[in-house]
Length: 178
Image (cartoon, rainbow, N blue to C red; front, side, top):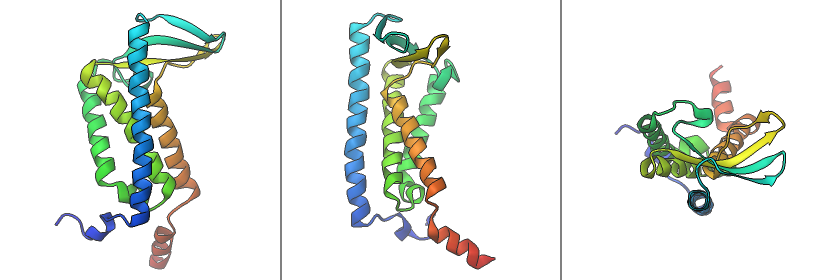
């Protein structure tokens, strides 16, 4: 078997409960992402803007055929394949990625909701709908969507957890080898 110890991939009841509730939240985020994109595409013309907070925040319907900040423009299939590969890997290696830390389960599942949300756009539309448009004066942040927020927030939580809560088992095993 390709896994040395299959027990490392079995989740205990506490972890299953965390995964269950985090998956519900991730599903709600995914639904909000898709509903907001449907509403924007239905009620806005492409590139139409509506000022929400003058000088700071607009709703602006744009399309993105790339990734964040327009990276890999026009590479829809490549981005879709990357998204699917990351999503599958995250599910398969959930236990290894989270190391039993509650916030890491939440983070991984929230990131997954964002990946799935943008992947749905790439499959159905061939591009991603962005509409949250923040700016201050001439400084303009690229427009984004709920899925992008989920990915950014999830990754931030995940990496903060890695920095602030290292796995004590790893520290113990590396110290015993010294």
